[in-house]
Length: 381
Image (cartoon, rainbow, N blue to C red; front, top):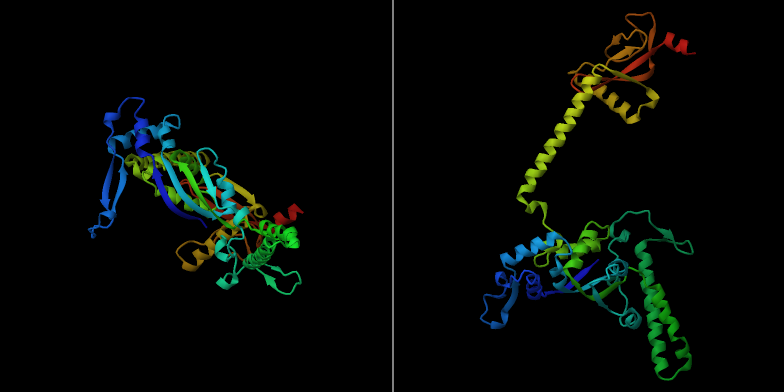
């Protein structure tokens, strides 16, 4: 879980002015502050708010510099973003990877861990299994005594209860120590340690963070498809910032020609694949591959069996044919024990051992069963 509050973006005027310094093109700048009434139905002037509006000329130059790479888009490092983030410690450990261009002030766990009672809302636990929410799971264990089953949410609730007990004792000993109780002074820190070392990484911590558009572009590129939900929330927030296309880059749907490029690419790929398939079929037309039945994947055999059953059921196709392995005589219909029509050897339905796959002229693959005769079976012995 990640909460985002108090977002403020600053530095547009300075960034644009600096962006135009290399070519002395300040006169082409068309950005300005605009004022609008946040409550148009009120006559109160205090409802007027200001917003920096980037003009078309400046936005065009920003976009070109942005696409030119980090060496040319120094203006992005000058657009500063302030925001309050409330997230679990396991997410903050990943966020701390970004050191350059970021500053953060956090609530102090060391000093204020006992400032308030611990509750379930202080932790990111939305993914923990809880049968109370009708979640069926095999992720549980027995209590130490082996009396009852304990689920993940129970472990967290038990931890919270222990944290609150340690907090209660810490505050009690701290109050006694302030009155001169030497025993309390000697042992008060022991209860502080209980809270520090028991605190789960799902504990939510608030930080006020300063970033810039260049840092956000790096984060967005690296974390957009991350497995943690918190990064998805953070990247969604980035997409909602003013002129966020400078951070995220243009979407394919925003490039009109992209649809034509994609369709042409698909057409060429399909043409190449079809040409290769036609060439393959032309070379191998009429060619058969015989595969021992035991080497054919079970799902392939199941598909062939189902195909035969469908043909027989609906009667609109000739049933899958069986062939005598000795003379290759074809026998249609259901395969039962029968003599081959061309040779004096009995065809054994329960002794089918070979699946033969033929390449047809239209590129399709025709599978068939090849049946073993008694003579073939005796000869193999």
